[in-house]
Image (cartoon, rainbow over all chains, first blue to last red; front, side, top):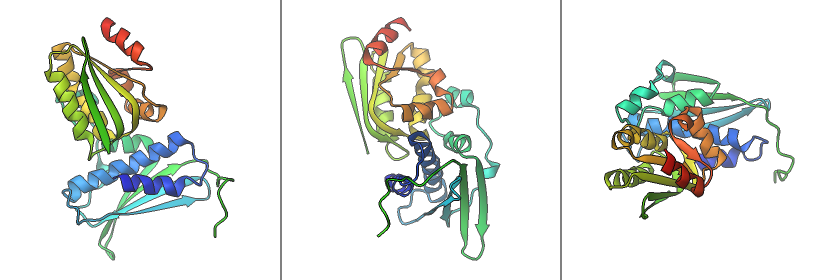
Length: 137
Length: 114
């Protein structure tokens, strides 16, 4: 989990994204990955996930999470009632609610060629390349 | 990684959370909350000064005790929370269901009043 969060921070730190926005995107991706690890991969450490980050036209960030687990159509997720979760003393069930509130667009697809599920999280954002970034070597 | 400390003071229980609370580490926060709720204390203060990150798993821990705290009439106050972490509580409206203040002093005063 920590390595996923570090990867996102390290990748996006060169862009002028506010700390709050960046930390929320990190949270959203963390939530989806945690859900997949727990529910699709039953916490099996031998399983793996791929994460691709695409920064497009300085106006959006797309996170693409790919795995081979039991697919879950994130678009079919129904928002839970918080009062009910509190009444029932549940500890889980709100991760994807955070993802939906943070991200602008969420997609699920399956690539039959690669046998992979693809979870795409899209965030519109006004970003600029950070001027202080050292030139690439 | 997270370090969760628990201290039983004269009239309240102080939980300190240091690090990142995610799906793999929220169990430590849960254990501390459980110990605090099961003790005879009527006030639980949570110092979030060094809480750098919280995911839904951490929020879920606090949410899962709201009912029990109410039933046992135990006051829970979180304090010293940074703005990034506070924002996560705000996204789901939990800042209105839980009591979150700036300083330990405020937390002590408020836990006396609640």
